Image (cartoon, rainbow, N blue to C red; front, side):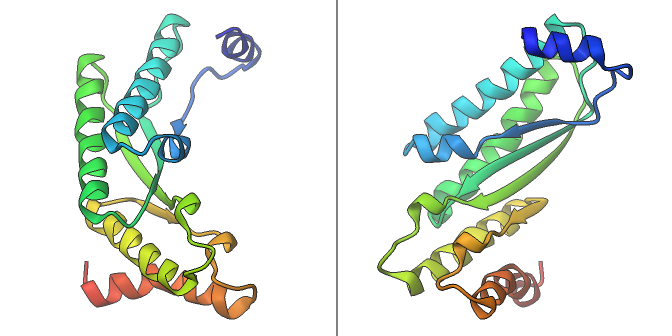
Length: 168
């Protein structure tokens, strides 16, 4: 809080545009989705409490970045639970906020041996993100099966094909 307070005192415009929470670390730490969700909500709540204790106006937009995997039912449930709990959290704090959800693939679950199956896992994970209403999907070169432009294009085309074929 000292760092936030110092930064806030040096910033002339005390209006922040968004609250960004990078919750990808929680999916790497916890196997249980319930524990992951509870830690993400606690993280957001603590951020709100810090803003309020320092008397900084809370931004009107929350960007939550979370990691997903190919476990379809658990991941859809996780994203829907996060959205619902965030809405309830901001109701408790009597604040209105726009929620933007960004998803990345939990690359710690990529198999070094079954590289072709990784494509299926990522496709399923991105399908989860699309169905759950994510605002963005993060693709990195680390997700490519092999080095080279061809494999980068394959990874890039996964969400495009899903959107076109599923007509979402």
